[in-house]
Figure (cartoon, rainbow, N blue to C red):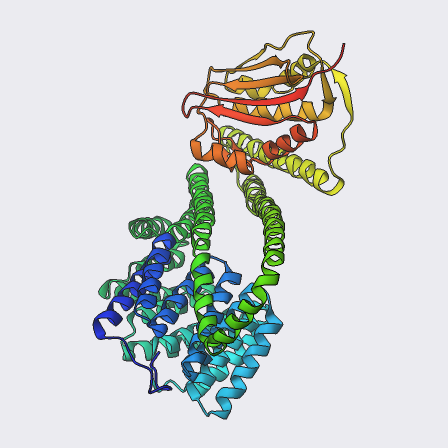
Length: 632
């Protein structure tokens, strides 16, 4: 942003300014795939700006933090950064920059779910830029209103705002933002089945972008137009647009658009030339892998699965579909890790806000200091007591909130992803069984896969129901004296089929006369869950042992469920101590959510015991839990 509003502001020398811009560029470059690096460079740029007392440069780097947090869904933190940016621009009397900052803030409020607040802020901004007769500001505000309307699931209202913005812009100055605006309008018309109107805007975008030299926007517009024509059944004309998009992408070195052009060509050819369509998709897949674009690769695998099914190549279709799900799983895990990495920039936010507040309150600082000195003699002890009490209370609340958020995020992750995927797989397999004629071997393979997906779904659902019941009703405890060896024997019988599939031996080495005091149903759930996990992570032909020792000084029985399988990494062991295990796969590809293990820990604690583990990665694991001794 150019500083046209405050002539008294002194710009740092060009070398220092270039260094800050360099950090901004590096942060933006790494934002999509390496957010930890993006945060690192943004932090370095922020520190340099503060060292040079370059307040404008500080706002620039805070904007990087806002954009990174926005991309990874940390909207609350992004809002705080954006508010800090606006304070700086207001302090520097940079009105246009502050206006654009408020527009970005409104969109962040909408992404956070505060639609009413976003609309109110944008209404104020629009009135201000209209009074100032700022055409570019009006266009930006209208575009933001369109984005907010789309976020509130009102595409017709969004179209109304965006078309007003396009009309006011007029297209006299063709920029990337203007080409993107035409693409947004075309996409919204297409989503409302106004394909003719969509083609009008895509055609306009194609003409404008080729004249303005916007190669990436031009290739995108060609592919958008091809998809619309494809959906209308105009395969030949759609093919021409995709082929032109492919040509432009190769000329200007745009690998992602090249891959999407190949996908469009494959879609247009899949009926009349299925083999050629597969070849184009494989070429697109090679490009996606070469640029590390996992989401694009997942889309391509899904398209390959559809064409393989069309050709009755069910094994290939299943393989492509599994790869599609695997990539989506890895993207979800990566996004969760990236989100955590980005949150580590919170400290920089606090420092930024402190500096802004210092700028605003500098004229009153001496007054506050004098008043504090007068009150210090009588008030310091009371303040320290209150601060200590608040600190302790806030720590407790933060720990509870953190634990609650971890459990909530895990629950929604399981419901929205781990429960949805196997059900989606079952639905697709049922569709294949109903619509296609299969030989006996193919049908048996499909049924085996359906049974596997069904078992996964049932296990997850049972764990969710059990956990939900414990959260809603609390853990109901009915302690009795019982013999643990009998419970273990029943669980061995129930899990015999699972063990037999991997030829795992089950050994009950608990003393016959041992008695413990506790809820027998809780003990049953804990031991069954640990034995099932031990089988899951055992190698074929291995063994699972259940042992017990007596801790006389503490009057406790200590149980050990031991396997000799793949073991548990140090990082997973540390997560288990804090909350619970993350999603993991057994030696046979079995998938677990860790929810059952988390509930088992709660049951152990409710029965006045504790749970811990010992493991060496690659050499097996032992889970220990204790129960009070019973009386004969």
